[in-house]
Length: 163
Image (tube, rainbow, N blue to C red; front, side, top):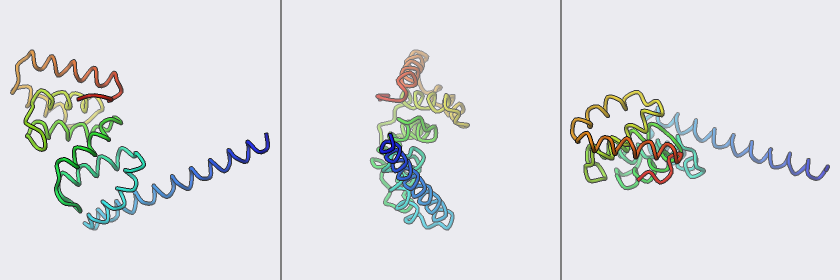
C-alpha cells in the first residue's frame, strides 16, 4: 500500500510538472504573439500542440493558414485544424468550414462548409450561424439536409471520422 501511494504521488508530481511546463510554454507563446514574434509563438505552441492540446493545434492551424511565423501552407493548416476539430474546438471547425467555402486547400464545397459551420455553431462559435446562412444560399435544400445529417452524425461520434 505504501509503495502504491509513493508511485501515485510520483506520477502526480510528474504530471503537474509537465502541465506547468506546457502552461508556461503556452503563455510564453502568447507573449511572443502579442509582440508579433510569430516564429517564437509557433515554436512554443508546436511543443504544446504535439501533446494534443486542442487550442494550440487550432492556433498552429491558423498560423499555417495565414503564414504567420511559418511559411503559408494550407495542407499543414488542414492537418492541425482537423486535429483540433476532432477534439471539438469550434474555432478550428469554423475555419475548416471557411476553407471549404472559399476553396482554400480544398476544392470549393459548400455542402462540407455547411457541415462544418453547423458543427461549429453547435459548439458556440459566434460567426458560424451567419456563415451557414451565406453558404446555404449556394446549395439546394436537399444538400443542406444532407449537410445537417453529416453534422449530426459527426457530433454524435464526438467529432471522429467527420469527413
